[in-house]
Structure formats: C-alpha cells, structure tokens
Amino acid sequence: MSTQAPIRRTTVPQIAARKGGEPIVSLTSYHAHTAAIVDAHADFILVGDSLGMVMHGMESTVGVPLDLMIMHGRAVVRGTRQALVVVDMPFGSYEESPSVAFRNAAKIMKETGCGAVKLEGGKRMAETIRFLTERGIPVMAHIGLTPQSSHVMGGFKTQGRDEDSWPLHIKDAKAVSDAGAFALVVEGVVEPLAREITQAIEIPTIGIGASSACDGQILVLEDMLGLNPWVPKFVKKYGALHEAIEKAVADYAEEVKSRAFPGEDHIYR
Image 1 (cartoon, rainbow, N blue to C red):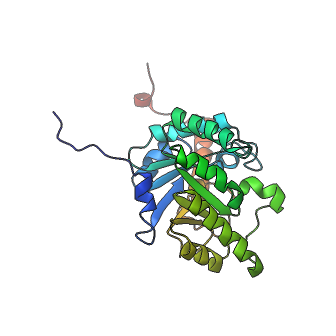
Image 2 (cartoon, rainbow, N blue to C red):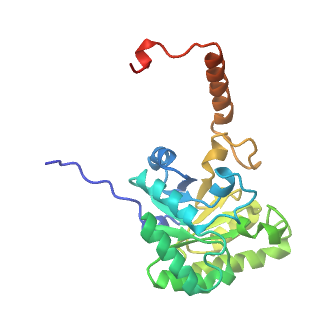
C-alpha cells in the first residue's frame, strides 16, 4: 500500500487568501502537454478564450464558442494535478441574464472538471457574479482592457490614460469584489491605476500588462515563450520557441530532401 500523500489541487479559498501575500503565479494553457509543465509552477492555470487567437487563428476572442472552451478545458484538467484550473466563459455565454450564465457556467464546470470560471465586466456583471457564487460557482472577474469588448473599445487599447476615468474602473473593481468574485484580473491599465485598484479591494488582483503592485501576474504562455510572431510590448520573452521550431522544421525538411532519413535502428521492419 502506498504511503505517498495525494497531491491536492490549489483551491479557490487558498487563492483568495493570498491577498497582500506571496505573489500569485499564473499562466494560460490550452492543452494537456503544456498544462502538465505549467502545473508544477503555477498557482492557477487559465484556459483563456485567447485560445481563439493563439491556437485557431481568429482575429479576436469574440468568435470562440462554448464547446471549444469545454474541449480545451478538459485537456488542461487532464494534464494537471495541483494547480487550480479556471476556464473563461466565452462571449455570448453569460451576458444575457444570470440564469443563462449559470446554465453555461455549470456546463463548463461539469464537463471539464475545472475549479472556477472567469468572465469579463465590472459593475454591469456584478448581479451575475453574485447569482453564480450564491449557487456554488466560483467566479474570477476581469476588468480594464476586456478583449471581448474590443470592438466597442476600438481595439486593444490601454485603459486609464485619462485619470478622469479612474473612478469608473475602481467602481467596477469594488462592484465585482462585493458581488463575491474571489480574484480579479486587471488587464492593460496604467500602473498607477492598477495600484489604486489593488489597494481598493479585498480580493487578489492578477495583473496582465498592469502593475507589479498587483497580487499576482498572468501571461499568455505562447507569448512569454516567444512562440507567437507578435506579442504585446509589456511581455517579457522567457524563450524563443518560434525561432527554435522554425529551425527544427527547416533542418528536417532539408534532411528529407537529401534522403538523410533516420537510420536502420529507427525504422520499423
């Protein structure tokens, strides 16, 4: 009989308790293999609807369907053992009403096995967040630059450059916090505003292109690995996978063309 203690996943209350403490580490992942690598280092993994752009070549996240999020969510859960897995609710799956949001959030959680969902929007989504959390669905909120609203915003534009807009962003943060969200992604806002938001609410803030004053950070895995040909200017590249893969493919193609196939010990007979 094994005496090894089972590995327990990070829980929603554990993330919520990290406010003002040790910084929260997070990355996106969309499939089992990368999730297994990230799992050893991240407190939570986000299956972001950014997968529409990163993996499926979409121009924005707006076209991502619910079933696609569920498919990738399942893969990430399968590939992990200890990180909390959070799955994005895609555009159109939660805005209509709290009851529609509950139906779709419950579907995501039941069919993926994830530990929480994330949705975009501040004050306007507070009623929905409260409705979900009161019915047992943990919610991570997301304000600032909200990609699903990029058409309304006129693109992916940094928020808070006009200081007169700060009270609206802070009001959004307080609204989702008061409604029961356990954490808040703050994306693409100027550093002083992200700091103000972090100080104004009692739940952890997770910055992406925001501020080191946030309680944690998240990045798109493919961006920080240097796999995407273009990345936002705030992203530090920790790898150069685009170049490495390109060279490997070129070397392979050259060997095939020269008939330098694998040796006898690599070929089935």
